[in-house]
Image (cartoon, rainbow, N blue to C red):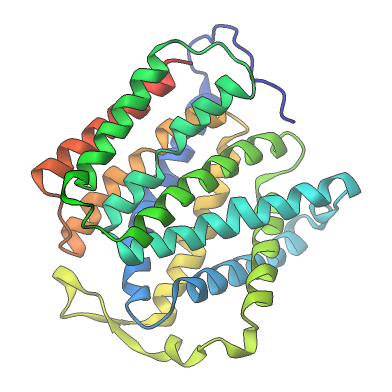
Length: 315
């Protein structure tokens, strides 16, 4: 179990704290752009599982090559770490990505991310009921705000016109993201971001290889040209180039930044800065894919983000 974070008052942020915030903000922005890129790739014929598989497999190979050249000693693993790394790879890496792809394949990118980024609320609840930290009563105000906002986002009174599969995947992704943040915060005390990311992606890649053998992967799709959709529909790009962006920019760099930031700031603070992602993703999806929220959904999104902010301030 992770030691409960200290409740001692914190002083003004130092340079390392600011660095941690900057790393999360950069990761959130790149993740937001990656959402629209991933949606285009999913429209090329690759399934959510296939995209997660190639993303995890390529990232694991590239992280391994990097570590073998730069710091092979970081690849050492103690017996006590094995079970944790397996759980981290399956839940914190594999499920987070697969459920994310399922969600954006069935929902507008902004709505999928808005639901998934209720994770900070779950982090705060975990701190209260598992770490037994004192959390102010406003946490329940935050819960009420988030539930109200989400009801507006999915337009609950209409019988939920949005995809049930997409909504379920987004909420599952929120729980998996909560696990990722808490597990990464714990392990960052013992392992660097690159090697932790490598073992996470390796385990996830092995999981997908068992579910879908690599020889059955539709490699021919990677050679195809695909429309960039929406406002860029007159332009095309090779699927392999878009997948390369997802692997290098949207995976290796982003996960390394997010995991590395946890050396400088706590998971709860990282999770609140990460709420920048659904905001930026909505803007990118609007400008690129032509996706928009209705007035009610915009109001609901603002209420959800307000609830997340209240939840964090309660700690």
